[in-house]
Image (cartoon, rainbow, N blue to C red; front, top):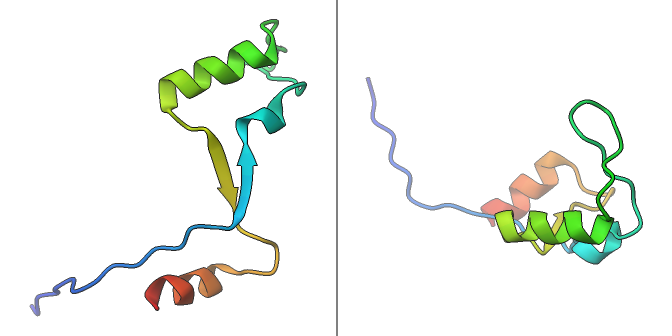
Amino acid sequence: MPNSIIIATGSYIPTSRVPNEYFVGRDFYGSDGMKLERSTVDIIQKFQEITCITERRYVTDDLNTSDIAVISAQ
C-alpha cells in the first residue's frame, strides 16, 4: 500500500465578522426549547469566558465550498 505524506496545509479565514455584541438583545433558548431568563449580556459574557470566542466569521454567499478549498490550497 502506498504511503501518503502531507507536505503543506492551507486555510481560509472568512472576511465577514460578527462580534458578540451583535447578539445583545436576541433571545437565547435552552436545550429544552425554553427561553433562558438570564440577560443576553450575561449569557454572552459567560460564553466568552468559557470559550474565549469574541467574534464569529462567516463565508459570504457568493462562495462555495470548492471556492474556499481553492483559496486555501493557494
